[in-house]
Length: 144
Image 1: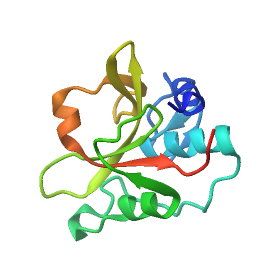
Image 2: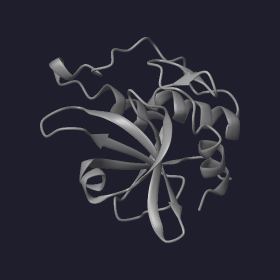
Image 3: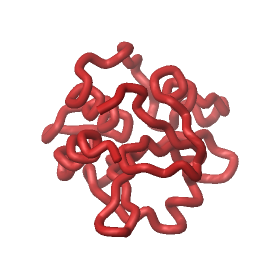
Image 4: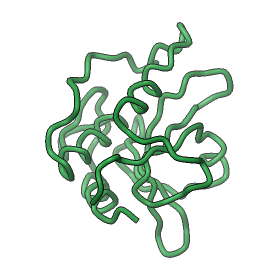
């Protein structure tokens, strides 16, 4: 378990949702949360993030977020589940993967921490409807 990753992510809970933002307490979207955790645990981000639309190039069918995750994170088997993993979600069948969360757990219950549009950074149960949407699981490549 990457306790440092989960602890850092939980520190963002309550941060308002704000598209393209990555500032604890001020605003973050799902990518901004992952970027903020990266900075807290390892330091500088690996690349400058260009502006992006909220639809993540869905009309073009371009898996922009997935490719970025593969550049900077290590993909692991979906059944190799650990707290601290970065989860990539496809929000609807046929759509691009455009939501991220960080796996956690409360007791024996799997949860995930994510910036949820219209809400804030929250920790949600990894219920069956959410689990079905996971299309890839990644791990930060650095050891903590």
